[in-house]
Image (cartoon, rainbow, N blue to C red):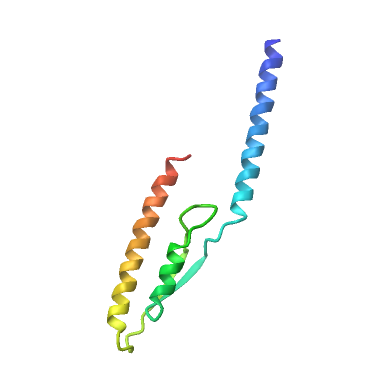
Length: 106
């Protein structure tokens, strides 16, 4: 009797792992994170929109490798670059916080 109970318990645990794996794969199918993102000082608003878009799978969207393009020949180039740098710092700080919050969930 005790042997069959442990066998049943082991089979239930295996089924639970299968369901959790299946749910994780289903959730990751909706991931909209990126491998790389271009951040241009000409279009700071677009980078901000990319940065604030949530990922259905991870919560905070990962932008991957961020390539920064600075356009200094524009009339307002210095102010735009300062705004972009501020957004980059905000994103990096957010990413570090998200990484540490994920560590507690495992």
